[in-house]
Length: 323
Image (cartoon, rainbow, N blue to C red):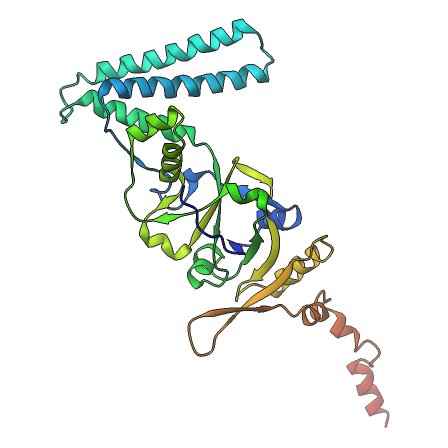
């Protein structure tokens, strides 16, 4: 993967909800399943079948055996099956799984309805593509280069009612964070996949990039970087440095976040987005905590209490009548 100079900050736009609170208070990040992304072409490269049927069969067999072995080994570990008989059984079942699928493909390739010169190569390419994507069961934590992008606030920041978390990248996390490349081809060559499986590091980087780090050019406004890790909520490998509140973010939300973070061992800076009077740009400015804390928390009846010592209206009327 081609790496570029990383910004000093990367930003995560969020609506204000329970997961956002966990990210702030528990210092976790959520690695999403790429199949849930709003772009259906994201992490969905197309295999270019530049190899013959026999080579594709060999590759598909290896992919299936590796996946099945990994799945059965994990299951055996869970139920504490060990020993050479277990390993031999797993290997045998993995080979049988691959052989069953190859037999099905050979049979289906004889269907005269396929309008292609080589139905077997076509079907093998489809299955290799599917198995390849199953190898990439990683999660993605998407970040952006800017915390003041109007489109990002609209699309991911709850239409400016949410907030934006600003992170720095510790040295230990740099190998897991990568910049998205926009545009170009969705194709990944079968020959590159085969070379990757044979241990070629350059081919591995090429395939990794094709699967995880390419998007259509219209998404380039996001200026996205991706942190790759196990799916689901994980302890954050990044350092939370700042929180930026949207132009429509409720004052009560700002107060709650400020109070939640005030005793954090490493200080988090708080900002809010303000409109520019003479253009369509947004600017970030420091949140005035003194003003915020002076107003919140408040009690609705506090104002009414100031009138508790005043006489009631009927008492005033009686006093005036007695004159």
